[in-house]
Length: 184
Image 1 (tube, rainbow, N blue to C red):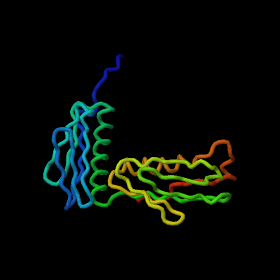
Image 2 (image 1 turned 30 degrees about the vertical axis):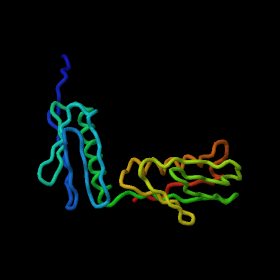
Image 3 (image 1 turned 30 degrees about the horizontal axis):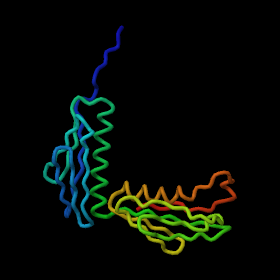
Image 4 (image 1 turned 135 degrees about the vertical axis):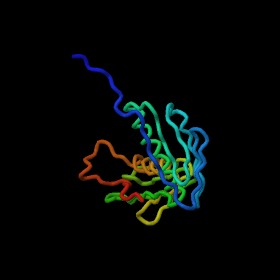
């Protein structure tokens, strides 16, 4: 008996609702979301075979003759659009905690960089890049990263955390560093 390749799901569709106060413009595979906190644009032209359309108060992402990859792509694009809508309404915030037991760490924001000084007593400062339009502020022992684009905010927080990564020390003993502890 031979096994035939049969397409199980022919049509896949995912809907994202648009809240009040948010306007969404769809031009082919380009999506522009405007809200009270700002404007985000994204180009999904790499997603061949996927259709994005606006229908009243929702965005519909769909595809025909879907295989496993296209099904995943539909859900991914819908999640990106949902994150864009959340970003222009509420925004995103990552909180990082400055932890030290040996040497007091000094954290300053200079332009588009975060400068970490006196980490483990090092003379040279460690530098983390601020990506895009994310804003960083230091409040006591906390570093707060905010913005409307989740990718920029998350990458900035990861850059700060990775700048204080220690190699060659036992992490159970040397816990000095800056660590993400909350996402909002």
